[in-house]
Image 1 (tube, rainbow, N blue to C red):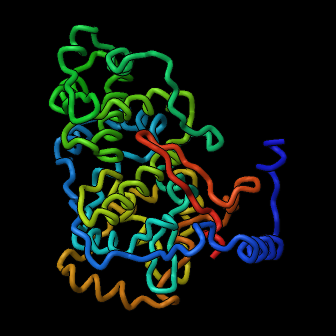
Image 2 (cartoon, one colour):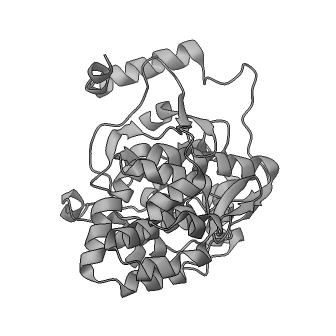
Length: 350
């Protein structure tokens, strides 16, 4: 039954008819009388981990080790070179609609999709139908770190720290392992774990959280991390928006790439996008963008967006099917590494 649903393809007319019928019958899936409003002001902390050390390690690796990394973990290393415009990011959060889990610019909604994130991260080992769900198998954080790093129990346990409500390992303990571990495979794994902990899920600055290690050990089984990255992005944006303050603990670099991808007006897409070896993140990292635009100017720009200013499909997306529903469910629950949230694929029908 599952495969029958996953393999089912419907034409645009059928999808539109279904969407209109659903909206007519069920409205917007929110509680009756609920009014979705955006905050007039937010003070989000966009503090990021210093990535120079990770970049320096990557630069010291030979091409063989880098290729092993690409084959195992895709293009996440290019996130180290994506600059985060703090002025733009703070303004973007103000347009985050926590009720619908999307950005709302006037009458227009912009939703992040799993297809886009999957295309950006581009990992050959990912199996898109295998998603992350935390398994409580009794394996301790120390045991997971031992398996990932190949280090002894004593080495691991003496370096684990308690940060807030969770356990972490400080980044300062990992660089030497990435550079000097006798096994190349372990150097690659520890480096990837560091990117996931410091860039994609930066909960505690300069520390890798226990929940990140739990996701990481599952990557070997071919699961796609995207359905875990998206909900933590949504949850953090919503927390910052609702409380009018807070530090964003999702992957700001991916959000920057997504934003520019939807506002890049082009007539033609390079044929290289359709080639297996073409890296979208690598291209984005090489683009020099203006950094002298103030927060006030970004606010003015986004407040005055018109429909023609936004590309609903990112310019680099290969034409393909998208997930627009999950069986008969209007909202899809996505499980992150710290919690869960709702996802509204119906919005992608724009």
